[in-house]
Length: 193
Image (tube, rainbow, N blue to C red):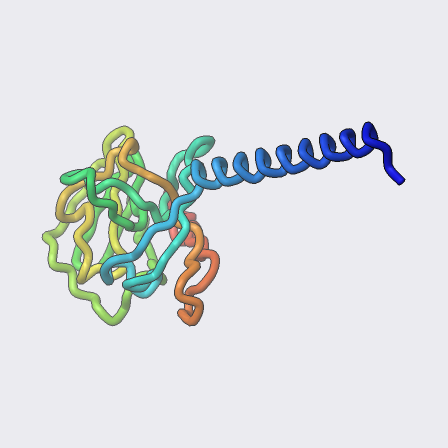
């Protein structure tokens, strides 16, 4: 049989363990909340990579130690209305020269072979762009569904401070063809300086 003092010690140990567990869980939840955010896709501008009504996770800490890169899919505050969040692919980074002629995208003299672009909608509703230079701390973004995307061709560059994070995972719904990690498309830009 356990004495009164031994029982009190055991209760203190259990209470301490429970408190430590609760503190650890709360700390983990805080870290997850700071670094990850869910995002709901509303529209078809990123087809076929992302679909309307999907849910994704955005890594808000992705650019703490590195700069956003060509090919990254980012969520950002729309420059004309910071209350709205958009999702697009980075095509050109600070200092790049970009040209777009119909469906051909050229970055720093290199023609991109963009396998992620929606081939079913090749229409480009925007005028030709010739040798536009991407300014410091700015990014040129486009949707993968080029005929149905409001992007840098229409309203200009995305300032660095507007970037919320990098899209990394499609987590809902389960039955889509792109469930899970988003593919890395950096090889499309491998020959750009």
